Image (cartoon, rainbow, N blue to C red):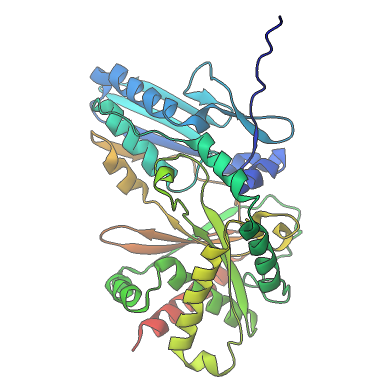
Length: 385
């Protein structure tokens, strides 16, 4: 009798990972992010550090993920866990210190993933057990969800709710979208630390998260910038609703559409109605987020170029999870923009910044400053009694 080996099970990429995979090869590197860490006085424990890093990577199946010619993902043992198709990690002695050079593609994980990996490195370094990462079980679960009526109903609901292409999803461009240049990154930062405490009080009173608050502010800013009665955008929902998803390194987040209409009508003068509508947008968006509307063709034609509101993990807060003092060393600045305009929420214990990361090929800095000023204007307006 001939023994036949079972075929390797393959899954579709998760929605955002699929977006990264689909980017033309000449632009793919914009989603590969470099990080360089200096582990102070670590040379004498380089072997222990390297072992901890390898253990942490091995604990997360996505680092042994491959993609086939059809863009489906499957697991395959790596010859060396620190080097793979979508990541490279080098651990080098530098005098008394250790340098960790890390490059990771966005196809592998979302904003929450970095925190999970850092915590596992700490656990492995201290000899603690690592909590399991059931990435492949999560993919099975997602495929099962696609067979449910709720998934089909969510698709219909989203299509009906967000089909009006006349509603702007970004501030008016300074240069046409089809401009034949590689998008160059621009960054503008606005300090909201003076409003930090007020925002916490507002969130508690109105049951509206920072994501919802700044989605509302950005939508209002887009509408005023474009001179329209409505505006839409996307916001990044962390997901990870089930306990078994909390330790998964993967791209589990969901981009959810958000829109505000009839801004020149009476509702425009009633904050409570506007806040209620924003809260409804957040809740209904989450309720129907099983279907990846904004990341699914043909809807991507519009939503790929929408403003995206997202929380970003503070790198300096992340490295505090490591067991020994670590510094983040400067790396070459990102040269290429991978979105037209992202509104990033950077929050830590003592500060709150909104970072506008944009395509300088399509927007002038003066335009982003103007847009940021409108976002601030509406933030102050909403917080005023």
